[in-house]
Image (tube, rainbow, N blue to C red; front, side, top):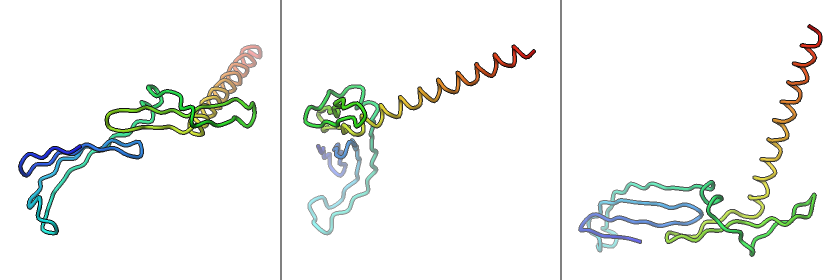
Length: 122
């Protein structure tokens, strides 16, 4: 989407899970090779937001190698574009979260066991 107001050009576009907003000062707008512009561009991407608001994508699945469970990708359609997380990305995030929780539980158990042993020895 582009809005032109005299020499000022405002653009909003998206792709590859990014949304971009751009403001430009344009001279010789229809001058072909003589066209000149100075622009500032800001991009926005949030896989966290996509994960929170997206729906399961039945066209994108991944089968867990250990359990055979089916994991769906995530997709959300907005006026500025389509944002996706692949099923493999969703599975990898779940696997990472599970590993972190197990590691924290093991560390806590180890710390509690050491504290109990020290208290018993004292």
